[in-house]
Each structure stands twice: as structure tokens, then as C-alpha cells.
Image 1 (tube, rainbow, N blue to C red):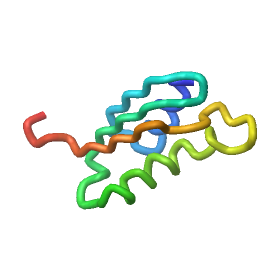
Image 2 (cartoon, rainbow, N blue to C red):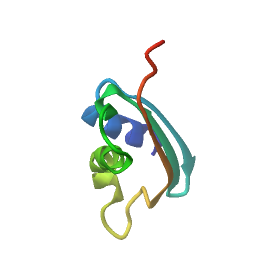
Image 3 (cartoon, rainbow, N blue to C red):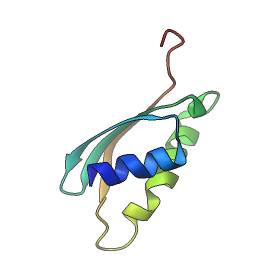
Image 4 (tube, one colour):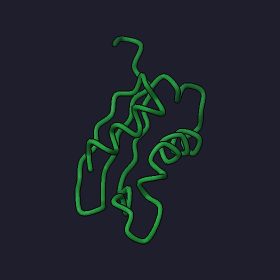
Length: 78
């Protein structure tokens, strides 16, 4: 499931660095991408949720909850 979440995010945000942890339907997701630049926290999170929405649909969805979602902009030093 972790790989499916990572792949869904990378499909929507190709330049992203993605870290996913968790299991049992509950996951922590950290995404770093330049696509977040100039966006507020809600706009950033909407981009990620849109990418993983198909994994969250339905009563038997494999991704039940995102316990923590962090959206970062790459530092200029990297």
C-alpha cells in the first residue's frame, strides 16, 4: 500500500520527494515539491489529497486515514 500511495503522488507531482509510513489504513505522508511554492497549507494539502483520492474512495478503501500530512517546499540549498 505504501508503494501505491507514493506512486499516486508521484504521478500527480512528478518532481516530488515522497515519504509514506504507517499501515492498517492509517498513514503519515510527507511530500516535498516546488509545486507547493506560493500556496497556502490548504491548497498544498488539496494537491496531495487529489492525488490519493482514488485510494480513499468507498467503504473498503485501502487508505482509510491520513494521520499526518506535511507539505514542504524544497530549500534553496538543495
